[in-house]
Length: 334
Image (cartoon, rainbow, N blue to C red; front, side):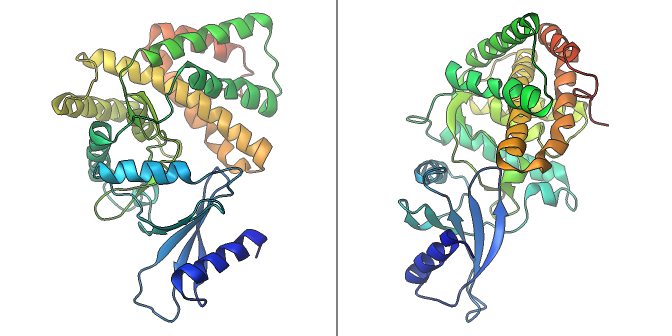
């Protein structure tokens, strides 16, 4: 038991008036946060709870509390905050269950789960208040894109780009940022993916929303249907994005009238996210000592090749990038 866990147990004993609780590791993510599920051995019928441990110097809990209130007010199913110690970095939360969408896909019809997730997404974009959230502006988009050359090309692959290659990469990044900023802005969860959606009633429970921003409307649909940890055939992804577009138009969301334009926006936005996530996964490996995420990098190169094939201008920039890399680096997933 480390020092923070001892501090956490002392805090919980005071909050719950019960020193006999049992803590079970619930999950950990790519950040410095960790979660424990609380059991009450002396009261088997008592509902389990979850406690978040977020070191305040690395992961302040204030954004989580703020965004949870915004999403709850919009009718999304998020954890209720039952107690908090912001200075220590502890939150006591209601438990949304044990099974994520990602796990449930192996046992249940993914279409019905995705339909519920899409309905919740539209509700979030319609009703969650984005005012006061950070803007997904040029500076943030560029910082995220810079993770790819810094952590994947240099740290993971040992590649130093020539001045010509760097110029081509800069041109690609500038085009991506321009297309992203041209989209209408709404509330953006920023990680609205199956791993952060829970099999919970009402469906879905929504987690990991503390990094929400005000930004491009295509970002969260891309997260949902072009996931980091599970892939569907490109034609199915396109069908779901078309379905979202129809539902969004009917709801009055500010998506382009043209389906073709919307799908194009999604491919450009997806390219930004895929390059960013490749960089993040490499950073998690080399900075944080968590190499397992790198196993999913080939999935993102497959996504990038799909977008390149459908978008000539984007394809030209991506092919220049691929041509600058050793063959094994940008191999698509099998």
